[in-house]
Length: 179
Image 1 (cartoon, rainbow, N blue to C red):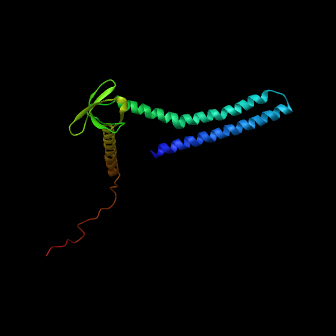
Image 2: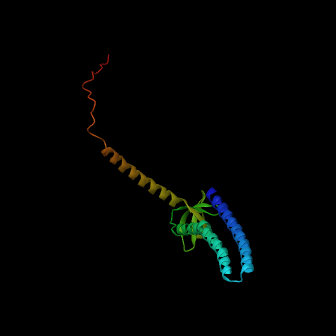
Image 3: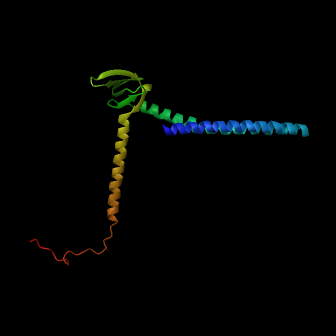
């Protein structure tokens, strides 16, 4: 949540700074065109003034696309994929905060059970914001993969033991007897 606020404030600052730069450049371009017109009446300086105004706008739109639009489209695509991959038995959370277990899926609706008395609700798939079961399955898969990696790493480190190191002989030490 903090990252979203940071990105929003950063994009607002960039838009403000680029707007100020465009205004300053356009004012400078107007002064330059007036000076050029007074010194000579050639039309080549007008093309340079237009280019100096268009370039910052293009940069501003490119920054806006990569900071705001592209991440939003990625989130929307992930949300749509999650909503389409719902299975019976998944625990979901709706936008309104209702938690339930999927009983039946349809084209654009899902029937869920909620509460201790197992009330059934039919909701639209676009209202589902989280699939808790899918997250748990992903965590279990990651944990199994990391356990498998650590197991293979443990075996690999066991192979690295140097057998040439001298071992202590217990025969040289006198044994203590219990009294």
